[in-house]
Length: 426
Image 1 (cartoon, one colour):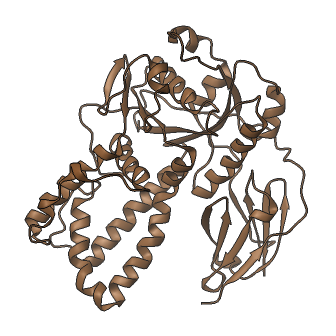
Image 2 (cartoon, helix red, strand yellow):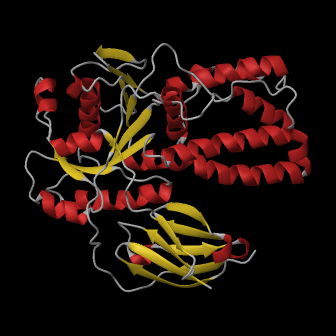
Image 3 (cartoon, one colour):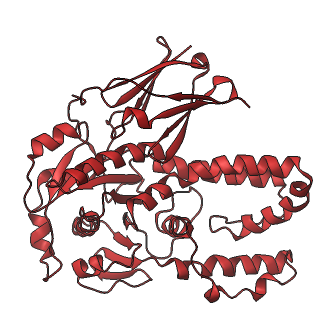
Protein backbone atom coordinates (compact mmCIF):
# COMPACT_ATOMS: atom_id res chain seq x y z
CA UNK A 1 0.00 0.00 0.00
CA UNK A 2 1.54 3.24 -1.13
CA UNK A 3 1.92 6.07 1.35
CA UNK A 4 1.77 9.70 0.33
CA UNK A 5 3.10 12.01 3.02
CA UNK A 6 2.83 15.76 2.91
CA UNK A 7 4.87 17.82 5.35
CA UNK A 8 3.19 21.17 5.57
CA UNK A 9 5.76 23.93 5.14
CA UNK A 10 3.99 27.22 4.64
CA UNK A 11 4.27 30.87 5.73
CA UNK A 12 3.09 31.98 9.14
CA UNK A 13 -0.26 33.71 9.38
CA UNK A 14 -1.78 36.31 11.64
CA UNK A 15 -3.97 35.39 14.58
CA UNK A 16 -7.69 34.92 13.82
CA UNK A 17 -9.93 37.95 14.03
CA UNK A 18 -13.26 36.19 14.44
CA UNK A 19 -16.01 37.73 16.51
CA UNK A 20 -16.74 36.33 19.92
CA UNK A 21 -19.89 34.24 19.86
CA UNK A 22 -22.07 33.76 22.89
CA UNK A 23 -23.26 30.35 24.01
CA UNK A 24 -27.03 30.17 24.08
CA UNK A 25 -28.13 26.63 24.90
CA UNK A 26 -28.64 26.45 28.68
CA UNK A 27 -28.89 23.09 30.41
CA UNK A 28 -32.31 22.94 31.99
CA UNK A 29 -32.66 20.93 35.18
CA UNK A 30 -36.29 20.08 34.45
CA UNK A 31 -36.06 19.41 30.72
CA UNK A 32 -38.41 16.70 29.46
CA UNK A 33 -35.51 15.19 27.53
CA UNK A 34 -32.95 15.61 30.29
CA UNK A 35 -29.73 13.66 29.95
CA UNK A 36 -26.60 13.63 32.05
CA UNK A 37 -23.88 15.98 30.85
CA UNK A 38 -20.21 15.20 31.37
CA UNK A 39 -17.96 18.20 32.07
CA UNK A 40 -14.16 18.27 32.23
CA UNK A 41 -11.29 20.76 32.18
CA UNK A 42 -8.01 20.79 30.25
CA UNK A 43 -4.93 22.73 31.25
CA UNK A 44 -1.30 22.66 32.21
CA UNK A 45 -0.46 21.23 35.64
CA UNK A 46 -0.81 23.95 38.27
CA UNK A 47 -3.06 26.12 36.09
CA UNK A 48 -6.15 25.55 38.27
CA UNK A 49 -7.75 22.53 36.60
CA UNK A 50 -8.84 20.91 39.89
CA UNK A 51 -9.92 24.27 41.31
CA UNK A 52 -12.14 24.83 38.25
CA UNK A 53 -13.64 21.34 38.53
CA UNK A 54 -14.52 21.76 42.23
CA UNK A 55 -15.88 25.27 41.70
CA UNK A 56 -17.99 24.09 38.74
CA UNK A 57 -19.41 21.18 40.77
CA UNK A 58 -20.31 23.55 43.63
CA UNK A 59 -21.95 25.96 41.20
CA UNK A 60 -24.05 23.30 39.46
CA UNK A 61 -25.22 21.91 42.82
CA UNK A 62 -26.23 25.37 44.05
CA UNK A 63 -28.19 25.84 40.81
CA UNK A 64 -30.28 22.81 41.77
CA UNK A 65 -28.66 20.30 39.41
CA UNK A 66 -27.94 16.86 40.85
CA UNK A 67 -24.15 16.85 40.50
CA UNK A 68 -21.35 14.34 40.97
CA UNK A 69 -17.68 15.36 41.20
CA UNK A 70 -15.42 12.52 40.00
CA UNK A 71 -11.73 12.77 40.95
CA UNK A 72 -9.25 10.37 39.33
CA UNK A 73 -6.07 11.27 41.18
CA UNK A 74 -4.37 10.71 44.51
CA UNK A 75 -3.78 14.47 44.76
CA UNK A 76 -5.57 15.77 47.88
CA UNK A 77 -6.31 19.25 46.48
CA UNK A 78 -9.95 18.40 45.79
CA UNK A 79 -10.38 17.02 49.34
CA UNK A 80 -8.98 20.24 50.80
CA UNK A 81 -11.18 22.45 48.65
CA UNK A 82 -14.29 20.37 49.39
CA UNK A 83 -13.48 20.21 53.11
CA UNK A 84 -14.00 16.45 53.33
CA UNK A 85 -12.39 13.12 52.52
CA UNK A 86 -13.32 11.76 49.09
CA UNK A 87 -13.96 8.01 49.09
CA UNK A 88 -14.15 5.39 46.35
CA UNK A 89 -17.97 5.20 46.39
CA UNK A 90 -20.22 8.15 45.50
CA UNK A 91 -21.25 9.91 48.71
CA UNK A 92 -23.40 13.01 49.12
CA UNK A 93 -21.45 15.78 50.81
CA UNK A 94 -24.15 18.49 50.55
CA UNK A 95 -27.47 19.08 48.83
CA UNK A 96 -27.32 18.04 45.17
CA UNK A 97 -23.57 17.30 45.33
CA UNK A 98 -21.94 13.88 45.52
CA UNK A 99 -18.23 13.11 45.29
CA UNK A 100 -16.19 10.02 44.42
CA UNK A 101 -12.51 9.15 43.82
CA UNK A 102 -11.69 6.63 41.10
CA UNK A 103 -8.95 4.13 41.93
CA UNK A 104 -8.04 1.88 39.03
CA UNK A 105 -6.80 -0.96 41.25
CA UNK A 106 -10.30 -1.25 42.73
CA UNK A 107 -12.06 -0.79 39.39
CA UNK A 108 -10.25 -3.88 38.09
CA UNK A 109 -12.23 -6.17 40.36
CA UNK A 110 -15.78 -5.80 39.02
CA UNK A 111 -15.03 -6.55 35.33
CA UNK A 112 -12.92 -9.55 36.38
CA UNK A 113 -15.74 -10.96 38.50
CA UNK A 114 -18.19 -10.41 35.67
CA UNK A 115 -15.85 -12.20 33.26
CA UNK A 116 -15.54 -15.12 35.70
CA UNK A 117 -19.34 -15.48 35.80
CA UNK A 118 -19.56 -15.47 32.00
CA UNK A 119 -16.72 -18.00 31.79
CA UNK A 120 -18.44 -20.26 34.30
CA UNK A 121 -21.48 -20.37 32.02
CA UNK A 122 -19.62 -20.68 28.71
CA UNK A 123 -16.74 -22.79 30.12
CA UNK A 124 -14.18 -21.34 27.73
CA UNK A 125 -11.12 -21.34 29.98
CA UNK A 126 -12.07 -24.63 31.68
CA UNK A 127 -11.97 -23.00 35.10
CA UNK A 128 -8.54 -21.35 34.76
CA UNK A 129 -10.01 -17.86 34.97
CA UNK A 130 -11.65 -18.70 38.30
CA UNK A 131 -8.21 -19.04 39.87
CA UNK A 132 -7.23 -15.45 39.06
CA UNK A 133 -7.22 -13.32 42.23
CA UNK A 134 -8.15 -9.75 41.36
CA UNK A 135 -6.53 -8.26 44.45
CA UNK A 136 -3.16 -9.58 43.24
CA UNK A 137 -3.34 -7.64 39.99
CA UNK A 138 -1.68 -4.24 39.66
CA UNK A 139 -2.34 -1.34 37.33
CA UNK A 140 -0.49 -1.32 34.01
CA UNK A 141 0.10 1.82 31.89
CA UNK A 142 -3.02 2.68 29.89
CA UNK A 143 -5.47 1.03 32.29
CA UNK A 144 -6.41 4.31 33.96
CA UNK A 145 -8.05 5.73 30.84
CA UNK A 146 -9.83 2.47 30.02
CA UNK A 147 -11.34 1.93 33.44
CA UNK A 148 -12.18 5.60 34.01
CA UNK A 149 -14.11 5.50 30.72
CA UNK A 150 -16.10 2.49 31.95
CA UNK A 151 -16.75 4.15 35.33
CA UNK A 152 -17.88 7.41 33.72
CA UNK A 153 -20.19 5.55 31.34
CA UNK A 154 -22.02 4.11 34.34
CA UNK A 155 -22.56 7.62 35.72
CA UNK A 156 -23.24 9.43 32.44
CA UNK A 157 -24.84 6.70 30.31
CA UNK A 158 -23.82 7.93 26.86
CA UNK A 159 -25.11 4.74 25.22
CA UNK A 160 -28.86 4.77 24.46
CA UNK A 161 -30.73 1.70 25.68
CA UNK A 162 -28.06 0.74 28.23
CA UNK A 163 -28.88 1.66 31.82
CA UNK A 164 -26.64 1.15 34.84
CA UNK A 165 -28.38 3.70 36.98
CA UNK A 166 -29.17 2.99 40.58
CA UNK A 167 -31.49 5.33 42.46
CA UNK A 168 -29.24 8.29 41.58
CA UNK A 169 -29.70 10.03 38.26
CA UNK A 170 -27.17 12.83 37.91
CA UNK A 171 -27.77 15.93 35.82
CA UNK A 172 -24.06 16.82 35.72
CA UNK A 173 -20.91 14.73 36.20
CA UNK A 174 -17.74 16.82 36.60
CA UNK A 175 -14.59 14.83 35.86
CA UNK A 176 -11.18 15.86 37.20
CA UNK A 177 -8.78 13.51 35.42
CA UNK A 178 -5.24 12.44 36.28
CA UNK A 179 -3.82 14.77 33.64
CA UNK A 180 -4.89 16.61 30.52
CA UNK A 181 -3.04 14.12 28.33
CA UNK A 182 -4.92 11.18 29.91
CA UNK A 183 -8.24 13.01 29.51
CA UNK A 184 -7.51 13.61 25.82
CA UNK A 185 -6.74 9.91 25.42
CA UNK A 186 -10.08 9.11 27.03
CA UNK A 187 -11.96 11.49 24.72
CA UNK A 188 -10.43 9.93 21.63
CA UNK A 189 -10.48 6.34 22.88
CA UNK A 190 -13.72 5.18 21.27
CA UNK A 191 -12.83 6.52 17.82
CA UNK A 192 -9.32 5.03 18.06
CA UNK A 193 -10.79 1.71 19.23
CA UNK A 194 -12.88 1.59 16.06
CA UNK A 195 -9.68 1.67 13.99
CA UNK A 196 -8.22 -1.26 15.94
CA UNK A 197 -11.54 -3.11 15.78
CA UNK A 198 -11.54 -2.93 11.99
CA UNK A 199 -8.11 -4.52 11.69
CA UNK A 200 -8.72 -7.13 14.42
CA UNK A 201 -11.98 -8.11 12.76
CA UNK A 202 -10.24 -8.46 9.42
CA UNK A 203 -7.58 -10.67 11.00
CA UNK A 204 -10.25 -12.79 12.74
CA UNK A 205 -12.10 -13.35 9.45
CA UNK A 206 -9.13 -14.01 7.18
CA UNK A 207 -6.57 -15.98 9.22
CA UNK A 208 -6.68 -19.58 10.43
CA UNK A 209 -5.90 -18.68 14.04
CA UNK A 210 -8.48 -15.90 13.94
CA UNK A 211 -11.24 -18.16 12.64
CA UNK A 212 -10.35 -20.75 15.29
CA UNK A 213 -10.13 -18.55 18.40
CA UNK A 214 -12.09 -15.38 17.64
CA UNK A 215 -15.67 -16.70 18.10
CA UNK A 216 -15.04 -17.94 21.66
CA UNK A 217 -12.98 -14.93 22.76
CA UNK A 218 -15.48 -12.58 21.15
CA UNK A 219 -18.39 -14.06 23.10
CA UNK A 220 -16.43 -13.91 26.35
CA UNK A 221 -15.50 -10.25 25.84
CA UNK A 222 -18.97 -9.29 24.60
CA UNK A 223 -20.86 -10.70 27.57
CA UNK A 224 -18.28 -9.57 30.14
CA UNK A 225 -18.13 -5.97 28.87
CA UNK A 226 -19.96 -3.57 31.15
CA UNK A 227 -21.97 -2.03 28.32
CA UNK A 228 -23.64 -5.30 27.33
CA UNK A 229 -27.15 -5.99 28.61
CA UNK A 230 -27.87 -9.21 26.77
CA UNK A 231 -26.50 -12.62 25.98
CA UNK A 232 -24.46 -13.64 22.98
CA UNK A 233 -26.55 -16.81 22.62
CA UNK A 234 -27.95 -17.05 19.12
CA UNK A 235 -25.80 -14.20 17.82
CA UNK A 236 -23.35 -14.78 15.04
CA UNK A 237 -19.82 -13.39 15.20
CA UNK A 238 -20.80 -10.87 12.52
CA UNK A 239 -23.70 -9.61 14.65
CA UNK A 240 -21.46 -9.27 17.70
CA UNK A 241 -18.80 -7.37 15.72
CA UNK A 242 -21.53 -5.06 14.38
CA UNK A 243 -22.94 -4.48 17.89
CA UNK A 244 -19.52 -3.48 19.23
CA UNK A 245 -18.95 -1.16 16.25
CA UNK A 246 -22.30 0.57 16.87
CA UNK A 247 -21.58 0.96 20.58
CA UNK A 248 -18.22 2.61 19.90
CA UNK A 249 -19.76 4.87 17.26
CA UNK A 250 -22.49 6.08 19.65
CA UNK A 251 -19.94 6.85 22.35
CA UNK A 252 -17.74 8.71 19.85
CA UNK A 253 -20.70 10.83 18.72
CA UNK A 254 -21.50 11.71 22.34
CA UNK A 255 -18.05 13.23 22.88
CA UNK A 256 -18.66 15.42 19.82
CA UNK A 257 -22.06 16.62 21.14
CA UNK A 258 -21.64 19.73 23.33
CA UNK A 259 -25.05 19.17 24.94
CA UNK A 260 -23.70 15.90 26.36
CA UNK A 261 -20.03 16.76 26.82
CA UNK A 262 -18.60 20.08 27.98
CA UNK A 263 -14.84 20.47 27.62
CA UNK A 264 -13.24 23.68 28.94
CA UNK A 265 -9.75 25.18 28.84
CA UNK A 266 -8.11 26.42 32.05
CA UNK A 267 -5.08 28.70 32.28
CA UNK A 268 -3.17 30.97 34.63
CA UNK A 269 -3.50 34.42 32.99
CA UNK A 270 -0.21 35.55 34.54
CA UNK A 271 1.75 32.69 32.92
CA UNK A 272 2.62 32.80 29.24
CA UNK A 273 3.43 29.08 29.28
CA UNK A 274 0.03 28.27 30.77
CA UNK A 275 -1.71 30.33 28.08
CA UNK A 276 0.27 28.68 25.28
CA UNK A 277 -0.48 25.24 26.76
CA UNK A 278 -4.21 26.01 26.85
CA UNK A 279 -4.09 27.02 23.19
CA UNK A 280 -2.24 23.81 22.39
CA UNK A 281 -4.79 21.69 24.24
CA UNK A 282 -7.53 23.39 22.23
CA UNK A 283 -6.01 22.01 19.05
CA UNK A 284 -5.37 18.62 20.67
CA UNK A 285 -9.02 18.38 21.78
CA UNK A 286 -10.17 18.98 18.20
CA UNK A 287 -7.75 16.29 17.05
CA UNK A 288 -9.20 13.93 19.70
CA UNK A 289 -12.72 14.42 18.32
CA UNK A 290 -14.41 17.05 20.47
CA UNK A 291 -14.95 20.82 20.67
CA UNK A 292 -13.94 23.22 23.42
CA UNK A 293 -16.99 24.87 25.02
CA UNK A 294 -15.22 27.80 26.68
CA UNK A 295 -12.10 28.96 28.50
CA UNK A 296 -11.29 30.17 32.02
CA UNK A 297 -8.44 32.08 33.57
CA UNK A 298 -7.90 31.03 37.19
CA UNK A 299 -6.02 33.69 39.20
CA UNK A 300 -6.44 36.28 41.95
CA UNK A 301 -5.08 38.96 39.65
CA UNK A 302 -4.31 38.84 35.96
CA UNK A 303 -1.26 40.37 34.30
CA UNK A 304 -3.13 40.20 31.01
CA UNK A 305 -6.42 41.93 30.40
CA UNK A 306 -9.50 39.82 29.77
CA UNK A 307 -9.93 41.67 26.50
CA UNK A 308 -6.51 40.55 25.27
CA UNK A 309 -7.13 36.91 26.22
CA UNK A 310 -10.63 36.98 24.72
CA UNK A 311 -9.22 38.15 21.40
CA UNK A 312 -6.48 35.53 21.52
CA UNK A 313 -8.95 32.69 22.17
CA UNK A 314 -11.73 33.93 19.89
CA UNK A 315 -14.29 32.56 19.06
CA UNK A 316 -14.34 30.89 22.51
CA UNK A 317 -16.18 32.59 25.36
CA UNK A 318 -13.65 33.37 28.11
CA UNK A 319 -14.00 34.50 31.73
CA UNK A 320 -11.94 34.58 34.94
CA UNK A 321 -12.50 32.29 37.94
CA UNK A 322 -11.14 33.20 41.39
CA UNK A 323 -8.04 31.43 42.71
CA UNK A 324 -8.96 29.43 45.83
CA UNK A 325 -6.60 28.72 48.72
CA UNK A 326 -6.52 25.26 50.31
CA UNK A 327 -5.14 26.59 53.60
CA UNK A 328 -8.45 27.70 55.11
CA UNK A 329 -12.14 26.86 55.21
CA UNK A 330 -14.04 28.14 52.19
CA UNK A 331 -17.43 29.87 52.23
CA UNK A 332 -18.87 28.35 49.07
CA UNK A 333 -22.10 30.34 49.13
CA UNK A 334 -20.11 33.58 49.05
CA UNK A 335 -17.73 32.27 46.39
CA UNK A 336 -20.53 31.10 44.09
CA UNK A 337 -22.52 34.33 44.54
CA UNK A 338 -19.44 36.36 43.61
CA UNK A 339 -18.91 34.58 40.29
CA UNK A 340 -19.27 36.82 37.27
CA UNK A 341 -22.19 36.52 34.89
CA UNK A 342 -19.78 35.37 32.15
CA UNK A 343 -18.47 32.47 34.26
CA UNK A 344 -21.99 31.30 35.04
CA UNK A 345 -23.07 31.62 31.42
CA UNK A 346 -20.17 29.53 30.14
CA UNK A 347 -20.60 26.82 32.81
CA UNK A 348 -24.36 26.62 32.37
CA UNK A 349 -24.44 26.47 28.61
CA UNK A 350 -23.68 24.17 25.70
CA UNK A 351 -21.98 25.62 22.65
CA UNK A 352 -23.59 25.41 19.25
CA UNK A 353 -22.11 28.36 17.36
CA UNK A 354 -18.39 27.68 17.59
CA UNK A 355 -16.20 27.61 14.53
CA UNK A 356 -16.50 24.14 12.94
CA UNK A 357 -13.32 22.06 13.07
CA UNK A 358 -13.78 20.89 9.45
CA UNK A 359 -15.31 22.73 6.49
CA UNK A 360 -15.67 21.36 2.97
CA UNK A 361 -15.83 23.58 -0.12
CA UNK A 362 -16.93 21.41 -3.02
CA UNK A 363 -16.67 24.26 -5.52
CA UNK A 364 -13.04 24.98 -4.68
CA UNK A 365 -12.44 21.32 -3.82
CA UNK A 366 -10.78 22.30 -0.55
CA UNK A 367 -10.91 21.24 3.10
CA UNK A 368 -10.37 23.77 5.90
CA UNK A 369 -9.17 22.30 9.20
CA UNK A 370 -9.27 24.57 12.27
CA UNK A 371 -6.07 23.72 14.20
CA UNK A 372 -5.27 26.28 16.93
CA UNK A 373 -2.08 25.89 18.92
CA UNK A 374 -0.05 24.11 16.25
CA UNK A 375 2.94 25.28 14.24
CA UNK A 376 2.99 24.69 10.50
CA UNK A 377 5.93 22.28 10.75
CA UNK A 378 4.07 20.04 13.22
CA UNK A 379 1.24 19.11 10.86
CA UNK A 380 1.52 16.14 8.54
CA UNK A 381 -1.03 14.82 6.07
CA UNK A 382 -1.28 11.25 4.81
CA UNK A 383 -3.60 9.61 2.31
CA UNK A 384 -4.66 6.02 1.86
CA UNK A 385 -7.33 4.10 -0.08
CA UNK A 386 -7.25 6.11 -3.26
CA UNK A 387 -7.81 9.54 -1.75
CA UNK A 388 -11.13 8.85 0.00
CA UNK A 389 -9.69 9.89 3.38
CA UNK A 390 -7.31 12.45 4.78
CA UNK A 391 -5.28 11.49 7.85
CA UNK A 392 -4.14 14.50 9.90
CA UNK A 393 -1.27 14.08 12.36
CA UNK A 394 -0.53 16.81 14.94
CA UNK A 395 0.22 17.04 18.65
CA UNK A 396 0.52 13.28 19.29
CA UNK A 397 -3.01 12.88 17.90
CA UNK A 398 -4.26 11.51 14.60
CA UNK A 399 -7.70 11.90 13.09
CA UNK A 400 -9.24 10.69 9.87
CA UNK A 401 -11.24 13.09 7.70
CA UNK A 402 -13.55 11.22 5.35
CA UNK A 403 -13.90 13.23 2.18
CA UNK A 404 -17.23 13.72 0.37
CA UNK A 405 -17.44 11.66 -2.82
CA UNK A 406 -17.27 14.73 -5.05
CA UNK A 407 -14.03 15.87 -3.38
CA UNK A 408 -12.07 12.64 -3.23
CA UNK A 409 -8.62 12.85 -4.74
CA UNK A 410 -4.97 13.54 -4.06
CA UNK A 411 -3.72 16.56 -2.13
CA UNK A 412 -2.60 19.29 -4.48
CA UNK A 413 -1.46 21.86 -1.94
CA UNK A 414 -1.88 23.23 1.57
CA UNK A 415 -1.55 26.61 3.29
CA UNK A 416 -1.94 27.88 6.86
CA UNK A 417 -4.30 30.84 7.36
CA UNK A 418 -5.68 32.18 10.66
CA UNK A 419 -4.99 29.01 12.66
CA UNK A 420 -6.58 26.92 9.92
CA UNK A 421 -5.02 24.51 7.46
CA UNK A 422 -6.56 24.84 3.99
CA UNK A 423 -5.98 21.70 1.92
CA UNK A 424 -6.66 21.74 -1.83
CA UNK A 425 -7.47 18.47 -3.58
CA UNK A 426 -7.11 17.56 -7.22
